Amino acid sequence: MKLFARFCFRMKVFDDGEGAYIGVEWLDVYDKNGKRTGRIAERGMLLSDGEYFLCAHILLENTDRLFLIQQRSDQKATRPGQWDLTAGAVDAGETSRDGAVREVQEEVGLILPKQALRFLFRDCWRSCFHDVYYMQMPFTLEDCTMQESEVQALRLVSEDQLMDLVSKMPHRSNYYKTRLADFLKNRSKSFFNKNER
Image (tube, rainbow, N blue to C red; front, side, top):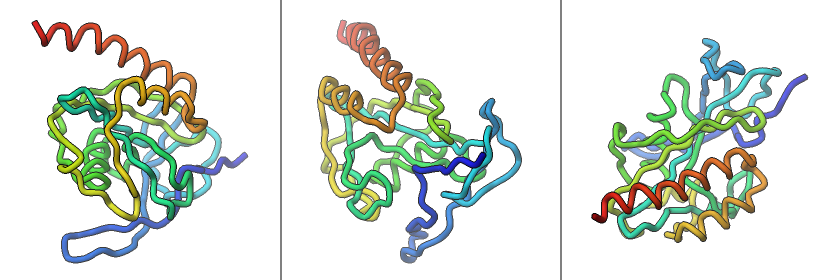
């Protein structure tokens, strides 16, 4: 049976510094163990059972303890206008960490130090693995630049507001929601208390 990678669409706007152009996104295909198969596929193509793409999600927190969320462009093929974390497909040849850094830079204009990203967990939902990262750094909305083809608005929200948003997302698994909630709860107890002494 074939599965359709519903989160995908085929074309992407690229900017090489000399102007924007539209191109095809090529993604590595992974097996059920999360290992590259050696095959690549065009984003949006049908995958066989036991084959997956890889996405990276980035939970960005500023030093005021507020989290960045973004509203997907109304022009997006999937979930137009919905609020979410910064996330996107990992391109062929990239690691999920590299993909996370690239997605944040492309979609919201922030440059992250790759080594400072903290890997939280991997989830598997439909035909995609989702690697979730966390980073705390000083930034404000004024530091962000939206990629208009992907993002139409940005907000900074509290931990409670973030979890309320995530808990209502039908496109996130219960495992994803639980792991994110556990991280936030434990992060608040240990990380901030330790650093405020």
